[in-house]
Image 1 (cartoon, protein in one colour):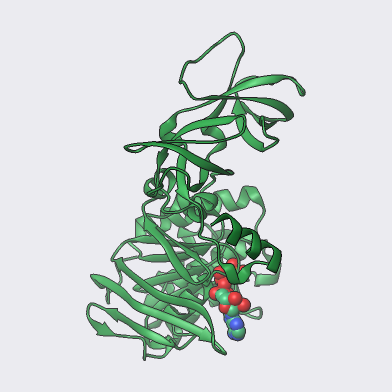
Image 2 (cartoon, protein in one colour; image 1 turned 120 degrees about the vertical axis):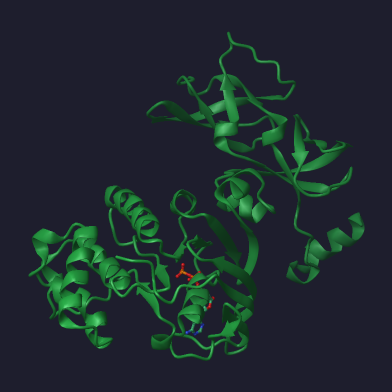
Length: 380
Ligand code: ATP
């Protein structure tokens, strides 16, 4: 298969918004997608991912903003004129058509000559490795095979953009992993430009060149997997990127980028991921793999350690996932290269560079009860 004939340099979403009955589902989305990129739209359920994808696809009119391909507006074009391929969670195959006919459908609609249809369908079938199943109906295929048909059907028309909305969520864990690699391989080998919606951060990190993290309809951060992994823009992104330990502590000292945070019986040195001041409430984010249980006989002097009691140990192959309770009763998720005994006291250590200190969200007084508001007034 060749590179799409109507390829573009860049596709630009400018201040795109969509509301439903006055409720914002997507607000001010600015994003430029370059030819050949794989972009993942990532966020929790209800954050506006599908709304963004459907606006781009032409399945939902915009409430605000514009969509441009190489400076030409396309947001007023109907879906079928945008020349995009779509792959959905539920496959959306024609149940009465064979695999071959499902894949040929888009080419027949475009009145492509019969001999060319034959060749391109055969190529697409080979790409997704379905040669053994061409005469079967979708109902006679497994979920993974059906999703391969849906992908072949989307790419056979050589669309200038492929849109995928949680295409793997109906598959079992093993197949999801295989299909991830498969989709990434197809993206690369066909030179596709792909926008992929998922709520699975691991999936997004492993497949995409850049990720767009959404929360409550608003972009939180756009960046490469490494940027989001190492420098999440706020604690919400950190939470989504696997920083399972989010703890509220008070800032006790600030020395350039190094911040000391604490609570009674708990002192940690970390790195300011957002500006914070002494006395302020901070939300501290740490990934379990950055918080190591140190064996009593191997003392590591990072100058950054906390004592905790082991509450649960899970075997994870090469290492152990350990739940511990800190000195002030906080539960933390950590990793160990050995299985510490439940009930034993261990020392945890963390590199201050991997302890990210964020400003806690400002308190919204309107969301508080009368008692909480009175308390806040007394404190401030
Ligand atoms: P999920 O991962 O669960 O599919 P999502 O991130 O794709 O979620 P959207 O489907 O884009 O989220 O929904 C964003 C918000 O818009 C939600 O609050 C949802 O209830 C609302 N919404 C979406 N479609 C409609 C609609 N047709 N009518 C009214 N509200 C809608």
